[in-house]
View 1 (cartoon, rainbow, N blue to C red):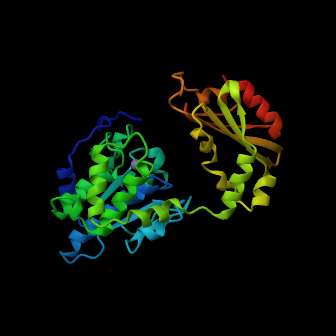
View 2: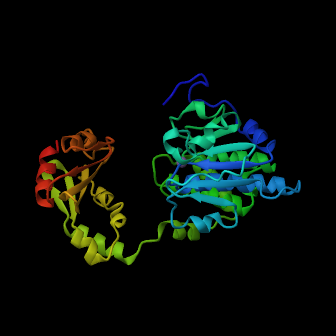
View 3: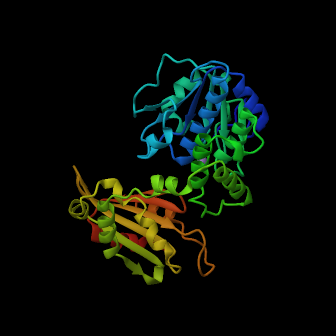
Length: 355
Ligand SMILES: [Mn+2]
């Protein structure tokens, strides 16, 4: 991350100053990281709606619009509703005709996550703002920065900016079509209020947004309960292969191309399976092996996770180190590798690589 003449990754404005700056612009494009999630979509949609609401009274039509870098979650159109949004497919250029007075980036401040918009932003650095909650970012992207690294979701500072824009006393008084995307960010970035980032501030905002009319159950169904039956059939097959390597506290599951075919499942449908055995207290490491084939023949994809806290007080396993031994890598808690070998052989190599 760069430390440029624009300074370090710190806030340069508070919520009030950000709201005033946004209110002074007639047109605005809202951007977020590619492959937007609930917080990315929620923060930009809420802000776009708040901006359009204040401009509607002054006679302007649709002053703010959201641009997203695909792929989009399946449920995105429902959350987007009638708000002006454009999705930019991979490799496609951004719309050239619209030249907004302001560009506001939410839920990221890193060039690496803004690739489709880089050129567009670079031509407009002086009128770009960032609202983010991540620990790192590229400060050079915007002089106007509202950073709240203690926030669980970026919709927390965005909720305050919306409240100030609309001049209401509490987030509980926000219109429901603004409260709903805000709540979506809060719920999804906290794993529906389960992660360690849940605190009193999160719950207070959640309570206010529910009071504003957010329908928790329908949102939860829309976003979380979308599995196809094929995914459950594939999960059944994966669980059927569950193997516990007792002395390594490791759970291993495997899938072959035949499993996908027979379950009628698409390649991406095994997402999240690797996390399932984490619910066993004595398991410290989990791995999902997927046998695949390419032009050079058969290979095995390894996906690994490590629990941050050991049930017995032991140090967590660094799966980045494990995967590096297998020719891959990633993060200490989540990592992966591709082993040029069939499943059984790849599994042996993996077990050997475990500490
Ligand atoms: Mn976020």
